[in-house]
Image (cartoon, rainbow, N blue to C red; front, side):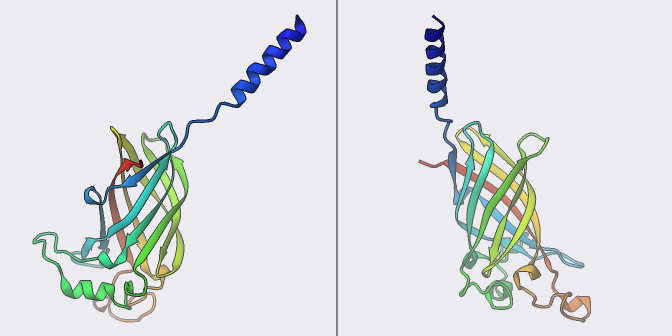
Length: 202
């Protein structure tokens, strides 16, 4: 009888151990419903700002809905500068952004951000995200808070991060490299504000 009980216990354990964990869920970004806004951080006066389009983007969650990872590809050729009041494009600024003084978009048409770590905070749906941002073939680690939540079958993510452009070799008129009056300098910091919407990958 004891032998039978032992055999049944072993069979139960074996069956339980063979149960596969629920699969992760991958979400694909919906470009038409998403927005990535850049804004410089000037010494004085109003900032320049504009948008950048994503080529692709994915977020991966556990079956329980906890964010686990992701990868994003930015279309640097889409970067523009728009007057927020009039909606007009600032062509001079756009041309300069695409030039070798800034993002050299002919030579470096894409940028990537690959998430390496996601840590939940104590607040609902809030995470601390760490990953590698590659611009102009230069990679740096950035960390920032984000809100990631489900809305029906969709996933929504909101985040803001400020980066120092000089870390990616963009030093044009930077106060780190030129001893000029501030009026003739361009701020190092660029703020990126993201509002992204995702659908489950089929």
